[in-house]
Length: 160
Figure 1 (cartoon, rainbow, N blue to C red):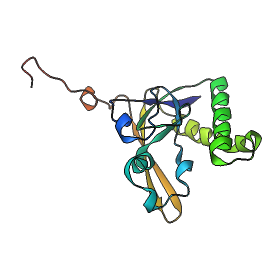
Figure 2 (tube, helix red, strand yellow):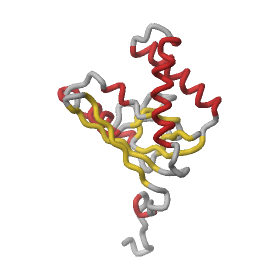
Figure 3 (cartoon, rainbow, N blue to C red):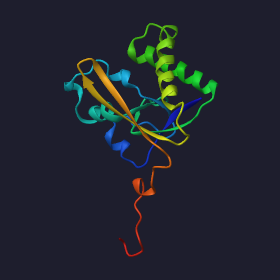
Figure 4 (cartoon, rainbow, N blue to C red):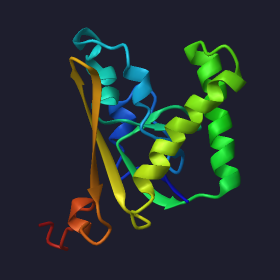
């Protein structure tokens, strides 16, 4: 089974999100946080979180990129429980038992998204508001397609 972990290619997440996720957190889309949002909510750092933030499942912060990797069944089950507890504490779910099916679905959606992807594949999410709610699209960046120039700047001794 596969899931994705947050990854930081630079320090930008610490500047663009109110609560940036830490590197290496297991992550899901987390689009449920925006289910009742309107255009009026899309300002500043909140807009950035809405537009392209993955939800880290330890800090419940946001990250721009995630990378696909294997996950154990025990770790998967722990994440489902953690998310169910989050639903109770922050989203008004009546109990962990009531929240477990929704948490399973949220984590399961991410497992499905990652299932056929190679390890180290990078993913981005893009969200938009539509008349029927939040629309999410995902971009897959194959590990073989990534070039070092995308994440690092090379300088010669002369400074060019």
